[in-house]
Length: 139
Figure 1 (cartoon, helix red, strand yellow):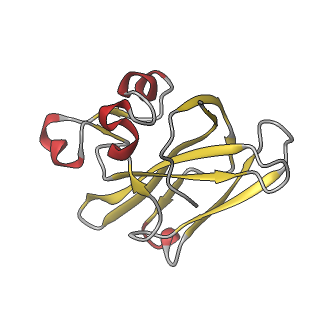
Figure 2 (cartoon, one colour):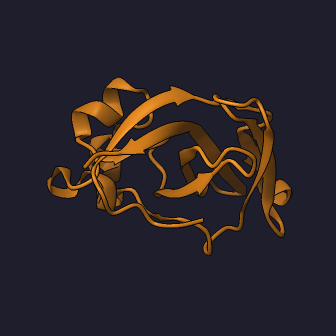
């Protein structure tokens, strides 16, 4: 799990086994698998609430890694509703949204995972993985 700092081109979306975890399903961590788009190897990811990931704003701030329009076009995030703007301009389900980079353990293809985690309503904590997309760093 790492931060992405270079400009990237986003590719295909990988197939995820499970993308939504509710309340106790995230304790101690949410664990799921995805199939590599290149070699079909099954990879595992583990997201620990309040420990995993980096703020999504780092990706689209000044288009340093990817543009807002590309993130929206690829369906990675949506525009945040007016009442939740304190989480940033782009979120997943109007909740705090994070990302991390990972790679296939078999062929080393790079992937970006985007997810949100927070209290949707009193007593309902949700971790929602928007998806995992392959990417290439641009020179």
